Image (spheres, rainbow, N blue to C red):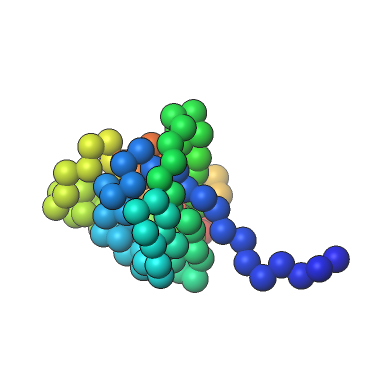
Length: 119
């Protein structure tokens, strides 16, 4: 089988600029982008943030981000949300799940981010 070099997902946005600002404020690094697509990186993993929206897709799209501290991410996201007015973005306190301690955060278009700390 041929070797794959990388896998990236396309993340939906309802308002591309608002979502881009959100991800950058959380700490993603922008490698390149234009008015419809941007490549972002966090923890050596890259995503394509795109100016495309489908409510059903956005509300069922999730990313699992392995972190050292779910509590620190919760506090960081709360701070970001307090500094910016993202229409639908929100965060919940860390919750102990069977597999990890998880901070759940929703981006401005409804994408669910799992900031998960291994037990």
